[in-house]
Amino acid sequence: MEHAEIAGLDLELEIVGETSGSRGSLLFLAPEYFRAQHATFVAALAARWRVVAPVHPGFDGRPPPPNFRTVGDLAYLYLDLIDGLDVPVSVLGASLGGWIALEMAVRSTRRIEALTLIAPLGVKFGGREEREYADVFAVDDAEALSWMFAQAPPDLSSFNDDALTQVAVDRQYLAYYAWKPYLHQPGLDRWLHRIDVPTTLIWGAEDGLVPPAMGERLSSALPDARLEVIPGAAHYPQLESPEAVLTAAGLT
Amino acid sequence: MDAWHFSEMAYHPAWEQLGSSLRNVVPSSAYDPDVGADLYHRYLDEWVLCDELGLNIMVNEHHTTATCTTSVCTVPMSILARETREARLLCLGMPIANRMDAVRVAEEYAMIDVISRGRLEMGFVKGAPFEVSPANSNPATLMERFWEAHDLILKAMSTHDGPFNWEGQHFQYRQVNVWPRPYQTPHPPVWMTVASPESARAVGARGYVIASLNTGYARTPEIFSAYRDGAQAQGRDAPPDRFAYLAIVGVGDTDDEGRRRAHQILDYSRTTPRTAAQFWFPPGYASAQVTGQALKHRGPLKIPLRDGRLTTMQTASVDEFVDAGIAFAGNPDTVFEQIREFNNHVGGIGHLLIMGQGGHISHEDTVSNLTLFSREVLPRLAAL
Image 1 (tube, rainbow over the protein chains, first blue to last red):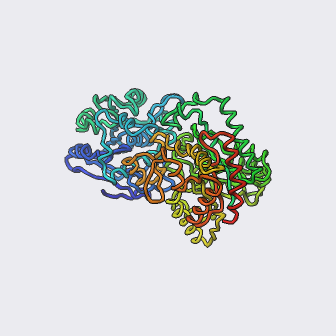
Image 2 (image 1 turned 45 degrees about the vertical axis):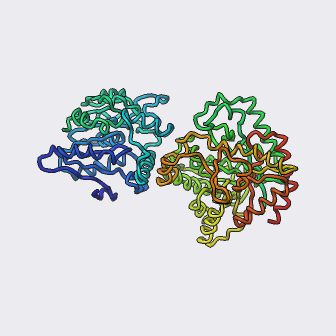
Image 3 (image 1 turned 45 degrees about the horizontal axis):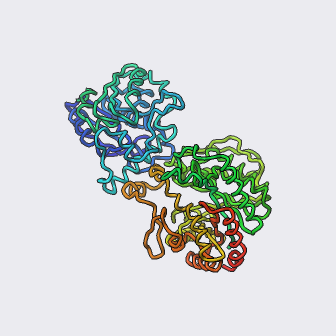
């Protein structure tokens, strides 16, 4: 892991892939859970891209500063980060990372060439009694994991103590940023028209946390978006069908 | 040592129907308001009786559950402020990190303090893990919200020269100006419950009354010791009146009768674990290490016995609860001796919080239990 000092915050980040001969800079914004399980996916990206993959503050186990506690703060942090990268920058975000990418892009696409969003959280279209994001904190682990994986989920019973602590840290910081309002920013839908870069939405056909219908609504709301649905995968298609995701997103 | 009677105002008629989960997701169709009204009046009558018996009164609150229908602790306490004359009135307590309007908490407490002419004891509690769901309170920021609410409530109760400004992380008001001001000056005494040495140290540093609930022989000494360390670090004394301990108490004319009563009340303890697993470890409520380990070892809740063995809370016998120091049960002599022994073990407690009602125990048994305790046991506690 490398470190970068951005806006007074010590950011932990992984930088992999060659600079020369690559397709450019790719900011990979990880989802809330299972970052360690993304190593194969990130390595595949690094074959074609100079991949910059920050660890969202808090998810590294270090509490963020007291005035850093919203997904909007994460968006500004990473806008500052890509100011220092070679352009053009592509942004790839999954789930929470996709939400951060949306929040970045409604603020500024000045240095962003294209977006790939895998089952992004963050936008609510429905009414007050519609739950668009399943309540993962109100069910047991087996049920929550069944929403996230179409195939066998990671086996928590095989995790060592450090990995189990990381699972708890991940849940803690998902709550820190997104407990209430739950997994979305009210009003974000109001500004999606500002995202004036080509956007690919990737959705697992069997996503039970936020079903592909959300992808269709986002695809309609974004100025230049297409939706690709990956069969046989749920909320983390990049873990269940990485090759299909890379192909569908045109990232190979 | 003084004594306080505590009941959770359980709605036990629904326990059997609801099965393994008594909280959070249980439909209120299981609650019959006619039966519930009778129970509320019965429980209030038992608290009013305490005033005659020389016992003080403790209420708490839980949400969305058949184990406790006190969903707002200040509601029964408001009634009791009017219906009693002598008893001290302890709310233990108000889950201030889950109450999104802290000034309203100050107002409720101040009104009760004035109506009761200064008999309120003011509990501020973190609340059980399964309480964050009903309040939709962010568990990842719970303790910072707790301490900010604490600071704001005490300032609101002790400021008498007009409005002040509060623009904090979790609470924002531009004109904080609480009426009425509390009867007690600068504010009613503060109590906090704790479940770990770390939080006990923080309470000791502030000199508040610490209440340790059902922590028994095994865990209470280290909690009280941490409180003394925290007090000493701030140059404070930690006399017995700073220490409270909650136990189930069953007194009868005979040991068998007392043990039978405790056995019934202990269904309070046995029903506590009947909560769906995901509500026990909301994200960030406990440390990541503790929460991570719970992913691996999510077995039934255990209580430690005096010899170090563990027994299962949901099925433990009255003798095991007595051995653990969670229940005191028997005839008055037996119960006094159990309390005396426990008191010595933990270094002296000033307040015994007795759960004198719980589970399916009848009103008649509850009255007899409280009456025997107050007449035969309480006078002897004065010497401890």
